[in-house]
Image 1: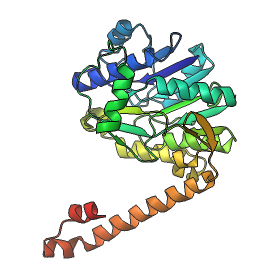
Image 2 (image 1 turned 30 degrees about the horizontal axis):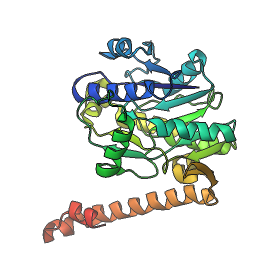
Image 3 (image 1 turned 30 degrees about the vertical axis):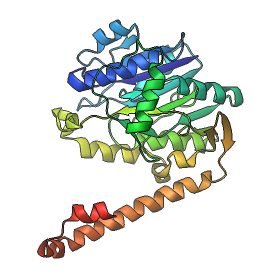
Image 4 (image 1 turned 90 degrees about the vertical axis):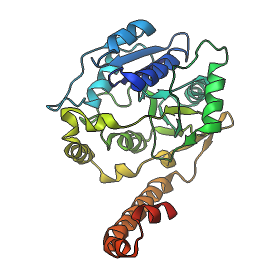
Length: 302
């Protein structure tokens, strides 16, 4: 039915807990689901053995040790056994509502990309998967105490098998720029883009971002972001979010999104307004400092 693949950070501390939670949740999506973890980070091999999932330690990296996403996507295509693939960040927990979304979509379309907004949720301990209703409990926690992030915060991409094979630029993972490209590429090639945000509660387990400031790769983060942004053949691809979806999953059925064409325009306007606002803050900083006003206070008021 489905192959879910990803790559992880070292399995240390809280990162180890939430990554284990995510991987375990994927193994329970279906009796025949296949899960593949790429990379040789500390604890990866042991975790794969513990969960009974496939481990691919080899990953192509740049000179700073940052992984190439296109290698992971292409290799997953070559070694997976299922018709549908899903790349998910390794802090995202998925449950039965995701499987239902895939079943509904695949009955209607042969080619598609399913994406959705994530739910930021505080989870600090190993999840109790021994509960018969563990997925209901997870969904309930996210809806009660979590927060659904905005339309550009997409952390899973479920797609028909051949959509990206040998077509993706050599993006670097963990840097901005590649996720909107995936969405844009589907639309550019007239593949149905499905927004599952209303149906799928994709639980992003909140964590800190200290790892971005550690290691050799952190010294080159800005340059690697610029590198990723330079790869898009069309600069407009950076404005593609869930708002560009051709279809939405609502109440257990697919509904056409007649405003899909407005999605990139809305994203462009929103980003432009942010740039104007922060430019204003920069220009007025000396005056605000003399008056005792703080930019953070003004930003919060906006």
